[in-house]
Amino acid sequence: MLITSLLDTDLYKFTMMQAVLHQFPGTEVTYRFKCRNADVALGHLADRVRAEIDSLASLSFTEDELDWLGQLRFIKSDFVDFLGLFKLNPKYVTVTGEPGTDLDIEITGPWLHTIMFEIPILAIVNELYFQDFTTTDSNAEGRARLATKIEKLKAPELRNLKIADYGTRRRFSKDWQREVLSTLRSELGTVPQGQFAGTSNVLLAKELGLTPLGTMAHEYLQACQALGPRLRDSQTFAFESWAKEYRGDLGIALSDVYGIEPFLRDFDLYFCKLFDGARHDSGDPFVWGERMIAHYQDNRVDPKTKTLIFSDSLTVDKTIELYERFHDRCELAFGIGTNLTNDVGFTPLQIVIKIAKCNGQPVAKLSDTPDKNMCEDENYLSYLKQVFDIPTN
Image (tube, rainbow, N blue to C red):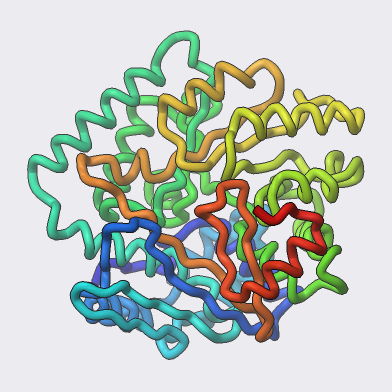
């Protein structure tokens, strides 16, 4: 059994789930799994993946876990009470595949009861796939690569550069992620004096005394395409609903569900002042950073009072480049995922689980990186581009 705690997931699952409980409790959704590696077929894992998903049904939150969650300033007491009753039901998940074919995973059911499947399933697929590669040499290679990264980050001129772990979904294994975080904590020290800001993984944050990090993910804004008053207002509806839930807390807006141009059109003076910053997750990060700083200036908001979070396929080297470009112009945060938790000498899997339907309606993600686009309905995709005035390539 690879997943042994319901806390072994990313924080933004809890923050979104709380918003769903309070504002969208009757919503139905469908998620789909996708592997972006063109030369990798994962169908041979189907039976083992199904067995691991079935085992999730035995898990529930312990009183200790609930007490710890309840101490987070933005987690409300009624949500903790709900989690005390929560169980993952595998009946909402179908898994199919054969050797030599793609792995097909679909999750369909109430959003409130399916939202917690994504991260554990992705972690399961990763760990099962890489079990065949795990050797003493791979662990040694991973430690050597991690040591090189830490040495770069310790450069005196980078003492104010802070990094965080966002790598649960694509980790080499649970044990390896724990070792990486323990090493970063001991070698870099934790903020405010140190350089390690924390982790998106709630279980490891609890176990290692780290800060859990996360706000919203793409699925939240995608679902709002079907939940808002009209499609054109779905992005602003999502931001308004988030602000209603958290009243100024967790104020980082995700900028790439429709692409940067529609985001900037909607992210007006009100949202510039209301939110603490924005997160980059596709497209050229240097161009995005310049656009965001210019956008704040155009709206008479001092960029130095706002935080830009970079989280798209970061390496330590790219993180350092971004820090050198922007560190004296705004507040910065960096979430490094695969390059921290799955850099042991093998090609990582590029796997995702994205929401495909909400209340029976197709939804889409229109990324600034076209390979990250996801939509099952071409007619809806064309309509969405028309509504948001997005050029058709």
